[in-house]
Structures are given as structure tokens and as C-alpha cells.
Image 1: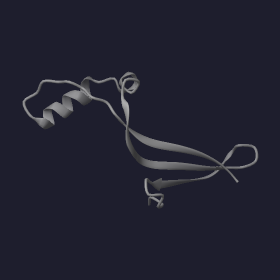
Image 2: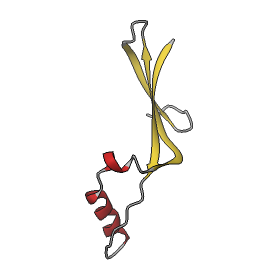
Image 3: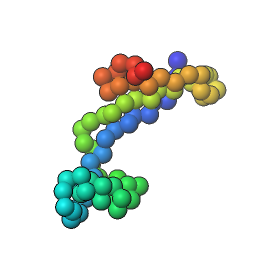
Length: 76
């Protein structure tokens, strides 16, 4: 059997902001950070959120997909 596995790994991206409280700081970091660019300077956070597993036929076409938790149990 052939599979294509998408690993949803967590990347830590430090962002320095000034704000009045923790929630405002998180919102400001979210609103002002271009994650497509910031991921390049980020680091793997040693954590995986989930796996998306595509089963492929002999031609490489999708047959079915399964979403797994980080502990490899099926996510429903």
C-alpha cells in the first residue's frame, strides 16, 4: 500500500510586542506576524498536533484519508 502522510508539526515563533495584558499581547502578535515568513526563523517545538494520512492507489491517486492524533489514535 502507498500513503502520503502530512505531519502537522508545531513550530515555535517568538514575537516581541508591547500590550496591556497577556490576551492583548497574543492578539497583537497574531495580527502583526506574517507566519509564512516567520516560520523560517521559527524552531520545531518538539510537538506534533496530528497526522493526515492519504491512502493512494497505484497511480498515486487518493483512495481515502484518515486523520490521526499525535498518539496515532483516529481523530473523530
